[in-house]
Length: 334
Image (cartoon, rainbow, N blue to C red; front, top):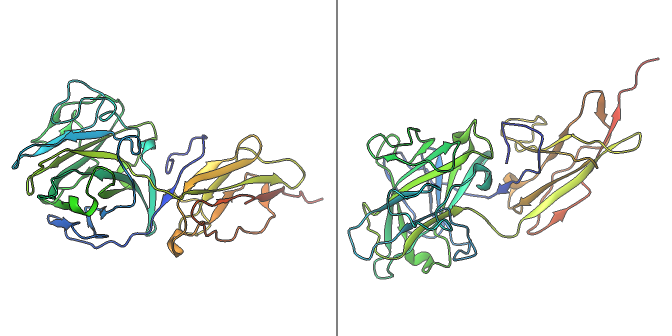
């Protein structure tokens, strides 16, 4: 997904999700022990979630932190390709490995873009509460960074781009009973896209997390994966030349705030040699905030002659095709 950096390239992917957020002050608790509960700390959203099936072969873990068999035990770790690992990470590269920023889906919520991460936890049913006490995100240029410093909160000398505890000791309270078993996810974490400003899709994202300071881990493992969803669809079309032919290398974008201007927060793609474009992996429109407005940036010397594209309400799994534009060259005065 590209946002503020705009090299020519492949199709962008956008994910939308309607979300009501219960704001909480920093240095406090986000209680996710009731279904559908949500909270916000330092700009990131935390949401209890049970709509995304997990388990082996369903989600693609990038960080698995091994569980504890006894009470009063904390668990911590971060994803990397480096070995040996520093903390309680599962050493298999299947479950703990480097992650590209471009592999973390984007979500459009309340007029802003976020990157979405999925957390799946495992606890004893008799002792289901677990605390997520520390979360820090880092961006690097290599897949094998190591050397987390608990005192400075730096990873390989890098400062976090997001810190749950910035400004105070905040934490998240989770209840395994809401989605018991490792067959369903437990929490979505939505981090503002602005935290990753200046990072490209091939940059590496590192997630450090620590559990168990308030409610100890007691079974299984805790697992992070890129967020994902079901029922996604697509919008596609062609940019045509009114004189015949098609227009390649044309910017087509999703106008997130419907202001008719390609803003840094808007999502865009570029038409191919056949003038074709597509936005795929789009969640369905659930409300007015999930309406899709498709716009283009006409090339110099051309004017759009086709009508403005109407708002698109995308149904679950729907592929909307034929969302076409027609451009004509300016007519020189005689």
